[in-house]
Amino acid sequence: MRVFFDCEFTGLHQSTTLISIGLVSEDGQQLYCELDDYDLAQVDDWIRKNVTNHLWIQQPAAIMPLDDVAMGTEYVVDNAPGVAEAIRKWLSQWDSVEMWSDVYAYDWMLFCNLFGGAFNIPGNVYYIPFDLATLLWAKGEDPDVNREQFAGITGNKHNALHDALVIKACFEKLIKKP
Image (cartoon, rainbow, N blue to C red; front, side, top):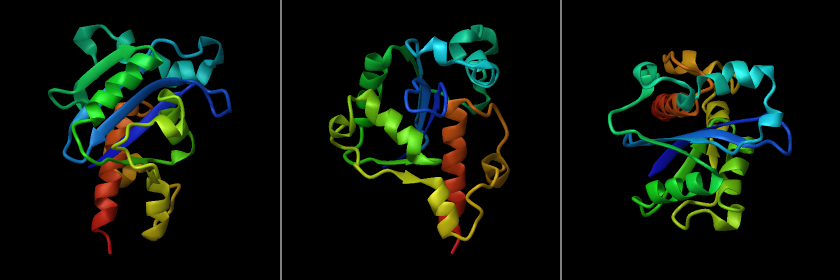
C-alpha cells in the first residue's frame, strides 16, 4: 500500500518539532493527527498565520474544514507518543507500506522521530521513502511546480491532510504519464 503523507512543523531548522501529520492511503483512507506538545517557542508569525491558526483543534466543530475530509477520516490530537501509536495502529492494516511525501527531507525525518528513529518505524513500513519532487523530475516536469495547480485541487494549503491529498493526486496524475 502506498501512503501519501505530509507534515507541518515549527520551521526549517534542525531542532524543528512536528505540529501535524496527514496520511492518505492509495485506497483513500485518511488519518490526520495534531500534536499538542510541539515547541511553542519555535512558532513564528508565518507558522502562526499559515499553520497553527488553522489547526482543527482551534476550530469550533461547526466550522471545521471538512472540504478535504472523507467520511470516516480518523482525527487524533495527542502528544508525540500518542500520535506515533495512532499512526502505528492505522498503518498496521497493511502488510507492506511505501511512504510518499512531497520532498521527504523533513517529512521523513519527523516521521521517523515520532517512533524514536528510523530503526523503530513500524515493521511493515519500507525503510526507503519516496518523494513527489523526484517523480516530477523523472517524468520531465518542473519539481518546483505549484502542486495544487498541477493536481487541480484547491483548499487549505499547509494543512497536513490537505497537502497529503494533493501529493496523492499529483502522484496519480504523474504515474499515468509515459
